Image (cartoon, rainbow, N blue to C red; front, side, top):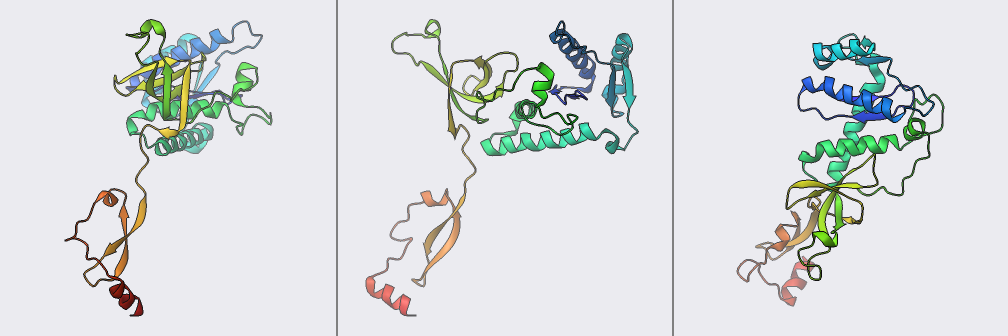
Length: 268
């Protein structure tokens, strides 16, 4: 579920297991937004919600929460996505960026939620059209402070998180770092969210060394050209994958060429 502030274009995303979770997610979002800006001198109160006619928004639980808070519900006409261009365009752009992250890291699709969260995080740190002519990022307009991008890293790269001495089995000879995958940024803390492939769990850490040129998942094998011998003793070129180059031909598989044969082949 994508939630976009109309003025700043600051975006939040909630990954729902089922549509009925939309009401609870919106309630958590509303409470978080109003509490974070309380006392800041800005009147951050949700006055209206504009959505399509999806069942997760027209359901009784979601409507009850809107009525309780006095929030106006604006529903689009069915089958007219152009009426909600901001949301539809954001959905398209974020899905494309998340897919690009997965492809760049050669990561499996099970990480799609973390890729979407990262795409939203980067969107909030980038100049976005529709901020009413203000040359600022959604993050700057939302929090009132400059954007810092020094902590950005390549998504899906290999990461080594420092192991505190108290957690080591042997303080002298135990490993001092864990081999992990960088999977997500943390918005409220100066930590990174990392995936432990062996334990299959997510952890958060601050002291992390990133090997950005080394993704944990190997890239797709590229096609290369390799010479193949034929029965006519004439060398030809065929397109094969890197897997095929591991094949070690024996004497029976490749016909050797003498210098005389090679001269004869080139003369022809």
